[in-house]
Length: 156
Image 1: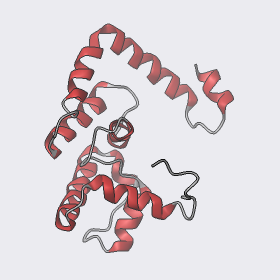
Image 2 (image 1 turned 30 degrees about the horizontal axis):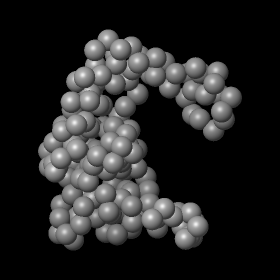
Image 3 (image 1 turned 60 degrees about the horizontal axis):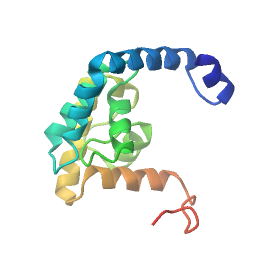
């Protein structure tokens, strides 16, 4: 697997990713599929911040190679979250420029407690603006991408 990842190019840590994929496949085949699906299926109905965080934490604590951001990336890619977003340097830079009341460090986001602290702040900001955090995340993402969004590459 690591050889395939290396040959694909542009992928950091191919050996670690290959090891994590192997370990996660073993977990899933060893009985984790049902528990993981049940956990994620909690998000298919109207949900809360707390439930989204619980599911993200289950993924982070159960699967190899998943930190706070990666667990939220997975859930967001599956279209299952509104409150829990993947927070990275793009988001912290925007919040720092915006005037977030605490100077944020993207390097500290690997710590789950710090990540939750920043996430709670983002959720409070979004509640005051009457938007979901996923909308803020999309706006920040689009604003940092420059003029790459055109009618020809947007799916309606």
